[in-house]
Structure formats: C-alpha cells, structure tokens
Length: 360
Ligand SMILES: Cc1ncc(COP(=O)(O)O)c(C=O)c1O
Image (cartoon, rainbow, N blue to C red; front, side):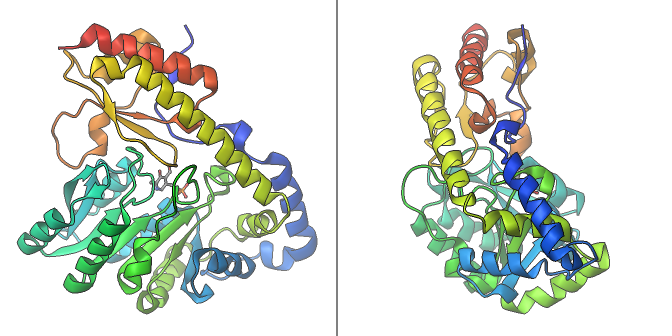
C-alpha cells in the first residue's frame, strides 16, 4: 500500500509555475543583472517592494523583503523577544513558530481558537494577569486549523494592542489564497503601529524561492533592517528579481486564478469526503474559506490517531505539536491543497477506518 502523507502542507510541484519562473529568471538576468547578482539593499529588491506596496496598500518604505516569511518572523522574534517575555498565540498555531518562540525562552500562552478566532475578552484577561510583549496570530486561514479571525475580533484585538502597547505579528502566509467569502482587512489596518504583517511567495509561486515580506510599523523599520543587515547582509536579490518579473507578467493573474480554482475544488472535495465518512464518527471541523488546511477534532480514541496512522497507510504528524499547552488533543491537520484528488478520497477513507477502529 502506498503511504499517503498528510504530514506536510506544501504545494505539490504541479502547482508551481515552472515555465513562468524560467522565463522570469532569464529576464531578470538579461535586463537587470546589475541589481540581481550583487549583494543588494537589506530592504529588498526595489521593483518588488513597489509591487508589494501597491498590493498591501502601504508605502514602499514600510516593506522589508527577506528570505521567506518564516525567516523574517524568526529574525523579528530574535530581535524583539527576550527570555521570560510573554507571548500569546492561538491554540492551535503554526508549530514552527512555537518552536522558535520557545527556543528564545519566551513564555508562550495559548488562547483557545473558536470558529471565528480567539476571544478578545480572554485576551484582555491575560493582559491583566501578564505583561504581554507580543501576540503571534494567523488571522487568515490559520495553519493548522483553517480558521479565520472575524473582522469584529480583529478590531478588538487591534484596540487591545494599542491600549496595552504590545506588538502583534500577523502571519499572512495564506492571505492571498481566499477561495470563498469576502476579504477581511488585516489587523494591521486597525493598528498599523502595533502590527508587523507578513506575506509569502511560497504558496503563490514556489517555496524554493525562499522569499517573503513584512509590512512594518514606521518606527520599527529601520532598527529591524539594521538587525537584518548585521545578520545576513542582504536577502536573495536574484530570487526577488525573478519574482518581480513573474508577478508583473501577464501570466501571473491567470496563474493565481488557476491556484484558486484548483484549491477550491480540492476544498469542496475534502469537505464532501469528511461529511460522508468522518462526520458520522463524531469528528468535527471548521469550514475554511481559503488556505491549505482543515483542522479536525477527533472524539477520544484508545490511542492517539497519529500512533496508529501508519497501520492504515497514512502519515500523520502529532497534533499536540500545534498547541501551546501540553494536553492531549487528538487533533489532525488535513493539508487538502497538498493532495491530489485521489489522495483526498483515499486519505479520508483511510482516516475514517483508523478512527472507527480506535474509538474509545
Ligand atoms: C503560518 C505559516 N507561516 C509561515 C510559513 C513559512 O512561509 P515561508 O515559506 O515564506 O517561510 C508557513 C509555511 O508553511 C506557514 O504555514
């Protein structure tokens, strides 16, 4: 039996625009090798900054482009967080971010995520109890749950950040991948001086480009750029020059439309398979409107589902890793965008068998 991996949420190769990137890298070299090949500005490749400024509705001097959004977040955290600082996260949240925050000695507090995000009242209660330095949030299509934070909650969270002067890191790795529903303004929109917002080309073009960006608060941009300069001199200018050619070409719009159409189809297919096979077993999930993941909450099983998954030809990660608190979760992250149609159907069927056989 071929193993189906539900372990990683990365785009499959077929979704990466190989020809567009080949032409774009060629053009970047032919037309602008003077900027693409040397070390360059630590803020990033200027034409791409300009494009990002337009698409993020901000001034170009607020943008720092770096070697992947995770690398920027890790550097930001290293720059800003000191051992013992309190950092709030959604529970569940991106496991790599948790690892980074913990490795810096942060006191990480997880706030339960509901179907429309964390509860601002609960956040306010924690603020009373602890001196919060930062909140790390994924308001659009959270990895791993798929949940989006409502506009009302974004406003309330932004207001708390302003009142109590803590910084929000708003991870927007999936923000451009909305398949249904209305766009919700980023938290940055409501508290620009208290928010560092990130975005990524990993899911829009290819993760191997290792390029992401941050929209910075005005009074923090320069100090952070200096930190980055002293850390990595300059980000990858060649990748950024290639991306600048790709996103300004006529082919980028249709490529994005193709991603949206394909991922929406996979989302619908996955939801239908879950409704058919897992709902009857008591499994629940929220309805993502975009992104890469659906988070499943399983009823109690005799063993954690990831411990038995390989007997059913599935590879699963330990769902507890997405939660700040060390309590058992029986949570499964389903990366529907990383699967083929067959893998969705077969994967959900195998998962249903595994759950049915191990229900407590
Ligand atoms: C929430 C979240 N943030 C950041 C990243 C990393 O993005 P990048 O490839 O831009 O470093 C990922 C990748 O899966 C992610 O899910």
